Image (cartoon, rainbow, N blue to C red):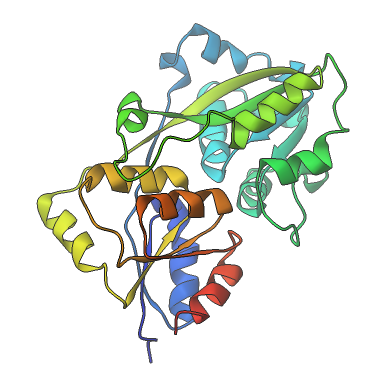
Length: 280
């Protein structure tokens, strides 16, 4: 029998399947309403500098993958540029912020011995945790490449009416880049996918509003998801909404938006399931 909770995931489509299956096995009724749309960037159309990176991957001492999407689209681009065999032959250390990204690297043939990622029992899976175990791996003058996504200009331009202005201290991959710069490491980056807000019909927006009751729990795994939701429904009162955020930084964004109940969890399905039990 299904538990009396409706779970709303907000993950990109390709990242939601395992979570949906796990939630349903645990007895929950779950749907995924992606709040981030991801599209690949074609290396041939991404500018000369971006395209040339694929011809000099062997010059980097480490590569940082910021998400499983970064891994997927990077290897898709490698195939397009016929660089897969060269990469496999000269594979440098691959850094991953969490288990999902590490698993994506393994799936694409990166040896486990070449993957640097926070341990399974880490307090969180993010850039500070990755930095703890990697800060002694590179020397000044060595080179690292960040493989990441690119936000559409309209994405960041949309303001959240309920979120106060915050300081400009770097977070996430920007914070990690800053640490590497301060250590004398040479940092480059390449964008292999775009992140944008979904387009919802008025009917979809109405359905979203109807879920803001005591029987629905939203799960947010990105602050950008909350930004997109706020831009889709800029005048919405979130005070009746209940949510789980998979990082303290995401939880802070939800609280600032005015969500009534916000609980923080590690970004693993097992931890989220534990958090869900507290709602029953």
